[in-house]
Image (cartoon, rainbow, N blue to C red; front, top):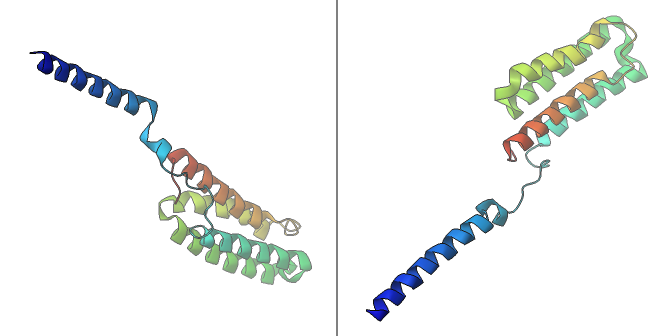
Amino acid sequence: MGTEEENRIALDEARQQAKFDQEVVPPEVNQPKKPMIDMSSDASIIFAVCLAALKDLLDYVGIGSFPLIGTVFTFIFMIAIAMILFLAAPKDFKGNMIMLLGGGGVEAFLFGLNFLPLLTATVLAIYIKMIIKRKSAGRSL
């Protein structure tokens, strides 16, 4: 009888130790943390930021400042950026498009604002919104 009692006590101790191990060391602690900004998966968004910066640079040097030519350049660049944003995050496309039209489209119609880098700031804001959403979901895309 003594060995049966000892086996039961040892089994209880092992169960308590296993329960303690599960409480003390959560499984996500052992996994390596993923970076919030991953250059390989975010390359398309970085390309969109570069396109927006190029468009704002063209506005600043004067090519995009001509009334008709500047509007055409703005729409061409915004269409290209919108396609990139759709490929990068199709679920968020509607919200991203509203931000893009609101932030970048303003300078196409209001004369005198095209020297400000509004399209670059808008695309950066969309990218930061994506990073915050990624962080709140606790994952990296």
